[in-house]
Amino acid sequence: MAAQFGRRLRRGATTAAVAAAAVAALSASQAPGSPLVASDGDQPTTGAAGSTPSGDGAASGNSPYFTDLPPLNTPNKPGTSVNLPVTGSVESGIPASILAAYKKAQQTVAGTDGACRLPWQLLAAIGKVESGQARGGRVDAQGTTLSPILGPALNGQGFALIKDTDNGAYDGDSTHDRAVGPMQFIPSTWATWGQDGNADGRKDPNNIYDAALAAGRYLCAGSRDLALAADLDRAVLSYNHSDEYLRTVRTWFEYYNRGTHEVPDGTGVLPVESSTGTHPGTGSGTHGSSPSPSPSSSPSGSPSPTPTPTPKPPSKPSPTPSDPGGPGTPTTPTPTPEPTPAPALAAVQNAGTGELTATAGDAFAERIKVLAKSNFGKPLAKVSVTLTVVGDTDAAFDGGKKTVTVATGTDGTVTAPVLKAGEKTGTFTVRATATGTSLPAVTYTAAVTARQADAIARTGSVELTAVAGQTFADVTARATYKGAAAGRVAVTATMITDDEKPAENDKGPYFTDDDGNPVRTFAFTTDADGTLALPKIYADGAAGTYKLRLTTEGGAVVVITLTVEAPAA
Image: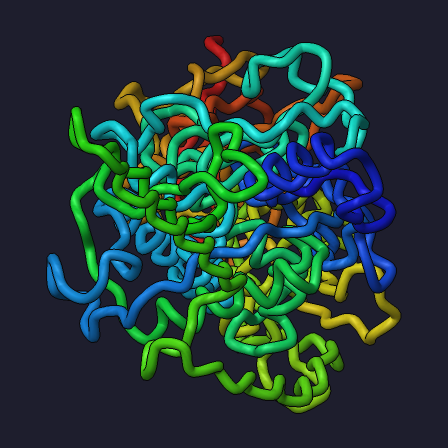
């Protein structure tokens, strides 16, 4: 748990009884705290429930939360294979459900944040320190602890003061918060980072699958790469900003990396009593002293009692596991390598986007792709990219959005949501920028073309004959494109001359405009089913045969014959 301390709690600063209780309780209370404190200019983050909180400032490694850890018993040499069901020492065994949850969390995070390179052994190390692997694996078939694992009330009495944030929903305390579950999340932190790791529709900090996944995402916050020693240290310190905590987790991490094995649930090593008291229901590794033998009683009637054996002095606990290569041999600490300079965003580029064309009303088949590159010339993950539709167009991204913000993946690229053309034809641009930077934008040109038809035909078979001065029967037609109805396609109707190269006829049948004036060219649009109903056509001029031509967008043409008869004598 991350109790809110502005300084370390010093043993001896209170009475012996209070100090003993504080140390015992703190041993079970290392977990991510809330609110989160960001570093390097990042802002605190509140993510949507059930999702990975966005932004790089979530778990910054600059938390003000301090705890002193009790020592852990020294484990023996672990087994040499993670695949053997039972091998090695008791201490190196991890309960089956707990181990499965850590590995599942690693796999899930790798699928969405491969650049983090989260190792399950780090989750195991933190789970060991926080709760002794959920009290030795005391969980049900779904991975939920058989009884709640709660840290001490954060009431300011030797601990941080964190007033209730969840109305007791998670920790059963409606006055103050407590750390909850096998990974010891404070309720307000769980509200931000809680996950559903076992797909049961719930986010339960008491479930090892949910808690392990939440811890994994928390450790990966801030674009960390946990394969780098410096990033791993920052991640652990964000969980509990204590050098002693970091050393302890680091040692268990290295220990589990050298080998571990699966043991049945409920048979893992349990936290035991220490010289300062017992854990208040939450272990953070085993620690304590060896029990003293009980005195022997003299046989009844014996003239002289058997001397009472001298009590065996308590063994001195070790804060970290010893080197598995030789019990009692001190481990030479491995120097932390100098951190590699962090890559910085240098540019955003077109990642190979093809031609952006679409028919009015249709979606663009090609999707915009953007590549983010670092100052080392390599792809850069987790870069926020903002794409904006620019220009005189009604085209938009899915949902009618003119602007969307997305983040690059592990390969440094991001694909924009589907772009949909509107009814307005012509060209426009989409601009991609690195969000919040002044780096040059990438522009993409897109074109919207009109709907087309490759065939049009008159519907109906009534002969179109009218006496001069009267009107023709209604004329209808249907346009198609590749055999399917061509809806909302532009069609031009023109009265034409009967020449080798027809032109608009200035005599004969005509339409009328809105003012009732004769016109011999008229523009229409087909209905959604491709049909077209022409307005009234008036018979005029000398008796004879005339031609009406219908031309679609796309070049389909049909010519219809109109016959004007002379009035009766």
